[in-house]
Amino acid sequence: MVAQIHQRKASDYSERKIYPYAKESDFEFERLMPLVRRLAASYRTRHPWEKMSDDQIIKSAGLYRTEPESGKSGYTLAAVLLFGREEIIRACTPNYVTDAVYRRENPDRYDDRLMVTANLIDAYDQLMEFIGKHTLDRFFLIGTQRVSVISWIARELVSNILVHREYTSAYPAKIIIEDERITTENWCLPKFPGKIDPGTFTAYPKNPLIANFFVNIGRADVLGSGVRNLYKYTKIYSGGEPELIEGDVFRTTVPLGLSDIFMPDNFPVSDKMSDKASDELPVSDKMSDKVSDELPVSDKMSDKASNELSVSDKMSDKVSDELSATDKMSDKVSGELSASDKMSDKVSGELSASDKKYRDILLSHFYNNGNGEISAMDAAALIGRSAKTARRVLLALVDEGLAAPIGANRNRRYKAIR
Image 1: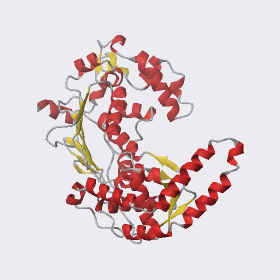
Image 2: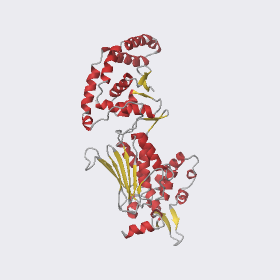
Image 3: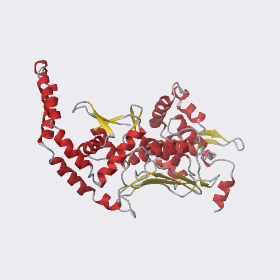
């Protein structure tokens, strides 16, 4: 208790504490410095660290300093945390650990766990990999470029928990991944306790040396932008908003589910799936597969014609001249699809609860990406189901007049109709 009161009243940061007996052999400069230079160069063209020696980088970053009052010199706690071997880190901060937990089957225990005790440069990579392994990398387009929104969210969460925590506390930092949310916790010295409002909050550095180092290697942004980025990326990924609460324990919660995803008024949205319907997903998939198997022979002929086209593409120039006959057959087959289209209208009117949810996800994708197009394979990645299921849902959108197919069978894509 007395130590915590002293930390709150201290005018200096704990990361600046000097360890005069820490030696160069206690650090991993030889392995990590080349990586630091590459990261700095990729973050900013002609970064000054590219041409600096290891010692110059360390001193310019404030990782080695001399205390004016006492004349004591040495590596700082920030240097130990960023470059130190696990032995020196454990000696200087015995309680340092980041506990990453994934819970799905058993909420009282865990399905996967990672205890990170490495230096902050390695810890960042390990935690990013852990989050990437246990979250969905949903399909999103910005313009014509596919982007990984969950990676942006993970970057903000990981950099925040590594940069802004109080390392002298015994409270372990935590990353907890569940089906509907990611929660992070770390000890801090609060300046403005309470829930953070991105429009009015005032950013206050917790560890300015570590924060500045992460900014220079592109693993964090300038002070204050992380909160705004987290709100922006979470809105794109799940339609919700994160919750950040500052106290002795700084807690961040990011929703991952799609149950409250934002949809415009001019897009018809089916009823949200109940918990019971969610439990019956395998049954609905079997039913949809059965319906798909009962489609007329013309669909199977179309698939056969499509397969023959792919084989003919690989044949010699002489054989490729015969494609016209295959194209004619494909046109004939597509003309025979009217009967199957009528049946498809009936099927789309009886969409299962799971297909309705996938339908809403695809509609949201079309809305959030303007007039963007999507293929069946990309749609499958977005909803996390098979291409067969994605194609069925896309055809239902076509039947409802909300999307239109573009291109031939092999390269067919779907575009929203405004």
